[in-house]
Length: 325
Image (cartoon, rainbow, N blue to C red):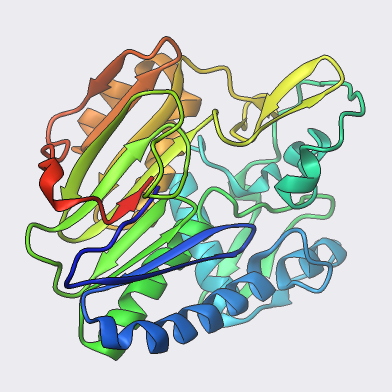
């Protein structure tokens, strides 16, 4: 997802959580203060939810050996979002894929994964399943069975964008867009014509022409929009061409007819979970999304584009996009 500014907005771009960050505010004078709040929020999310930091709360759960653990309210909320996504997608999005995705070689920051071409053996092994995890929100206590590793990659980034957008809009009293690696959440009063978002196959800067592949520009006024796909985070290990969307039924990269799925929803977390689930569900994804009433754009591996009812209308080019997914 990419973002460009108009006269009434201001934007900042940087990196956090191993991905691109874009913040846009409708009041340019508040950009710097909002950016400081965003940086603090994302640092807290990273300390709680990262599976690449040995000092994170999430990694500490690996040492619990099945014992109940009291966690921070932030991690408890992130886990609640992940478990809700699993239930809503019939397990197509499952936070217990940690060991499976680690076995595929995605066990560190993605830029390091790409440089490691050592061969691996692929083994079909269903993941333990989200129902094995229990979370008591009254006490923020979580129990993860021994040997089960969690990965919140399918939900935490989008949830963090939702939480940040709401926090900043309330603090600043203006319209805010937060994009984390293409997962975009908006809050507050939108700019005239809404927030313009360029949907494309790979996340990239808004001021650059999208990489080869189809793209479209849409406009939203609230909620979130996210694109899930198999095109951006790909790597090779030996003879295997891999991607990060894991099918919980096999523990292997999902075999899907879609290369990207973009979804608009009431929250970015819901949009991202639905898009990821659609990739796993495969041929039946369009019907599943339509049945949920979720506007979506699906791009097949051959470039064919299909949409579900309600997909946001095309935004005229004269305004310039605010973000890209």
